[in-house]
Amino acid sequence: MSDCKWYEIDSFASPYEVTSFETYLARQVAEGHAEELPPASCELGSSAKCFRWKGTGDIWRLVPPQGSTRGCWQPV
Image 1 (tube, one colour):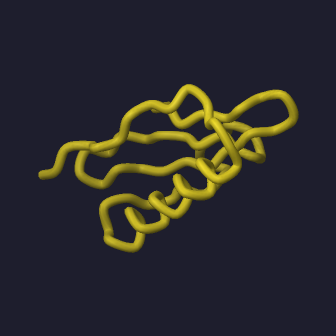
Image 2 (image 1 turned 30 degrees about the vertical axis):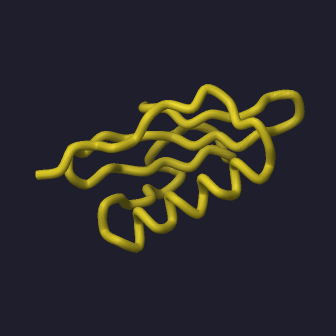
């Protein structure tokens, strides 16, 4: 059993940081540590993406920056 290695991000500093983080998440999915959940299963709005850490079942959401908001990464 593995522990969840994710930490909250209150806001992203730049578009590059968001892109880099999305690449990190894609790698976690590709390596089998996490899975992206269907958008309808999270009910968090159309722009949010939800991921489950397979080792613990923890569900997290990625909200990309939009307009004046800077986005976030946090547990659901």
